[in-house]
Length: 265
Ligand code: ATP
Ligand code: MG
Image (tube, rainbow, N blue to C red):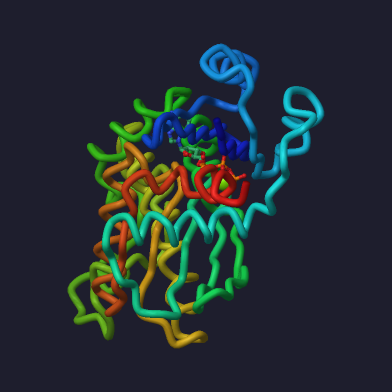
């Protein structure tokens, strides 16, 4: 029996193959112990492939015979497999955007893949800054708030600056994120909407620049930050289409690293 484990900055993702069927599970990184006990209970003699920033900790503490697979290799191989399984023939080259705790960009061309960009703005920003802005700790609560809020109560739009004058660019574009500060009354939901939009815009702008530089149109989005966060996913999808880029959101995309690691043993 084989298992692929991707232990990242926030979550531990487990892909476990049993009689030809793949099972998936994820736990907060703080519940590492209970995740591994579950795994060892269902599969005592499992062969483990480990990836992610905490792979060495997993190897040292739980899987001395585990194989460590480089994170970017595991991620890109996992994406390749999921695309194949979904029967999606992706024109190459394409860009993978992994929205994890932080965000990374990878360029894939045939057998070759290279990490081209990274940003500290990602799912960890959503959680951390989200908690500071609302005092809410729970991920699902934060995503629910984000979907209900009005970002216009915080964000200064181009049309706010131009007022009754005709703006030289689309008036609905953001002139400055959060710039209304305390000038306008706003709720926790509004703050989460503005935060989610700022994260989405940042990822969009970096994706646009990477796509232009490498002359790519196809963008594959993965990472747990897009799971159960329909507002962030919708923002990214809308912006990509607006820019003439073709987004794909992979089903089980948060398990690319775990599955990609598993493939290599
Ligand atoms: P990295 O790859 O950057 O080291 P990671 O692999 O742990 O980190 P992901 O698991 O892809 O990153 O994404 C983590 C993000 O997913 C969190 O920051 C949060 O925004 C989001 N998330 C999704 N589901 C949950 C959940 N149940 N609990 C906490 N965060 C969640
Ligand atoms: Mg990760």
